[in-house]
Image (tube, rainbow, N blue to C red; front, side, top):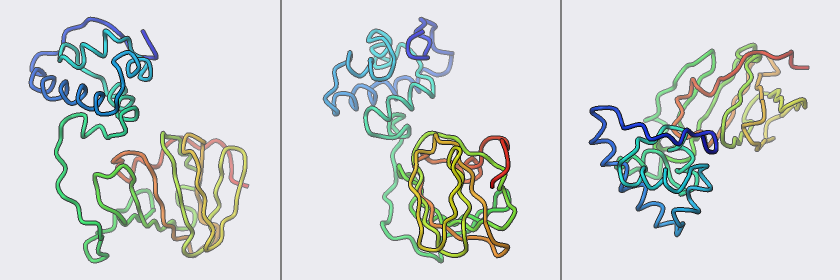
Length: 211
């Protein structure tokens, strides 16, 4: 096993030949576009050059962790690695076109186009909703308080943010968000967790009380 990935010789499951033929040329083309040699790309992804070569020739099926690692190295998305075409996206998002999504008491309104590396949301956090949920996931987060006050816990440090305050942090840092006041809090929120459903932003068990 290299870099957490099993570098075995198992044949791809039956029925996946078409998928392999679609992925393999994308992997090679994107690597070459970035100017990386097979050895350099394999080293960055925690793979052997032989394993990456087999991925690029369709002899091996890439796992999701492998695709995520390669997408980061090549500066692209998993969708592009899979050869998916993305429809043209409007730069402007109209408020009337965005339907709210509700998850765990929070209300999310999409504030940017889908299919982007960043996801932008307008979020309403009611008082007492999900204040005990710890979130830990890859990527970065940026938030800006529009209305109300936000209690933000980053690791072992607690912060109280008022309207106009913002925070930008590595989302692998355990973090918790809660409304400080009974009227709740409204945020602008941007994260780089690629194409995550809003509900999956809420990860992890309670590990203590917010001060």
